[in-house]
Amino acid sequence: MPKRIVYSTQIEYIQCLDEQGKLDEKLVPQGDPSRLSDEQAVFLYGKMIEYRHLDEVAFKLQRSGRMYTYPQNKGQEAAALGAGAALRVGVDYLVPCYRENAALFLHGLDPKYILLHWAGDERGNAIPQRDKHGEQGVNCTPIAIPIGTQMLHATGMAWAYKLRKEDKVVATFFGDGATSEGDFHEAMNFATVFNVPCVFICQNNHWAISVPRDQQMNSETVAQKGIAYGAHCVQVDGNDLFGMYKVVLEARERARNGGGVTLIEAITYRLADHTTADDARRYRSEAEVESWRGKDPVIRLRKYLEGQGLWNDAKQKETLDKAEAWTKKIVDEVLNYPAPHRNEMFDHLFADIPEEQRRQRDTWATHSLGQFPAQIQLGK
Ligand SMILES: Cc1ncc(C[n+]2csc(CCOP(=O)(O)OP(=O)(O)O)c2C)c(N)n1
Ligand SMILES: [Mg+2]
Image 1 (cartoon, rainbow, N blue to C red):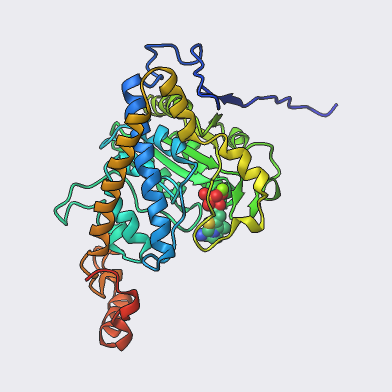
Image 2 (cartoon, rainbow, N blue to C red):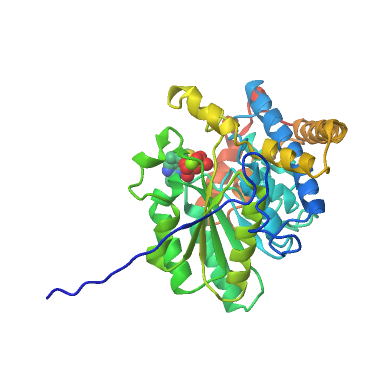
């Protein structure tokens, strides 16, 4: 008789705040540590408004020729913000891709660096993590454009924290498309075998540029990919701030207590194009986008807060005005940022620059192309 290994499992789907703004009181009872307090929810709603406004302005900067490209985060704010709120600022470490601006800002990253980065300035990705420029370092790595690579960095960092017995959790963020990369599988395998304090947060926005989820993976969910590695796997409504906070908080505590690695699949949707170089109308139907506009995390949270008597039109206007002033200040600073030294792109890769790079840098310095042409000169 052939032996048979019987295996059955299920993926839990968590939603605390539904599309009508109704909170599931059983899932997150009043006073439960995994429930955001009223004060926290109001604070985070204000941040959502600020960050969405900045996101819209960044799009306009690109359209008006002052930024090379920009991937809007619009629609995915709750996933990033709920996760960011559940991680300890200045203690835990964020290892992002490029759609988690909200989490980075919440942890202290000055938004000007994100804008500088997309304007092609190396300093946007190099300064924030370092103290040497006289600024407070932020616990985040630079945003990762090569899809999936950051998950391996996160795993290595978490392993280091474990070996050093430091009470830190590393959270890494990535898209659904990234889970089709080998890096995801290597990272999950290593992280679970060595039981490192790492939380894997997938923002499943259903598309990897123009490739829909069901054409790039044969599994029914992203979450179940972690089962084979022995990770804790959960799906959550990524447009639900309360749900995100709860699952990430639980995953964080599990990681801290040596309880294992968690893979979180946050179901969300990008309401804008992939980047400013894309036109999503060519591959997504208007009906699909429209259905997700109804699940917008900002609208949902506002409904909840209004229902609780915690928000009203006057507060909305006041917050929007503040968001506009806040954004304007950041944009002014970016547009007037001193131009980078042309050697800047060589400065942040190695502590001691290797011979080959040194040679390239010296050649660059003598070449006329070493001068930035006027039209792409960002700062003064
Ligand atoms: C290694 C690598 N391959 C291809 C690309 C080109 N690329 C940029 S974004 C992207 C899709 C990523 O999709 P997903 O992981 O779902 O993230 P999303 O953009 O939807 O947030 C691809 C293929 C890249 N940046 N890096
Ligand atoms: Mg995606």
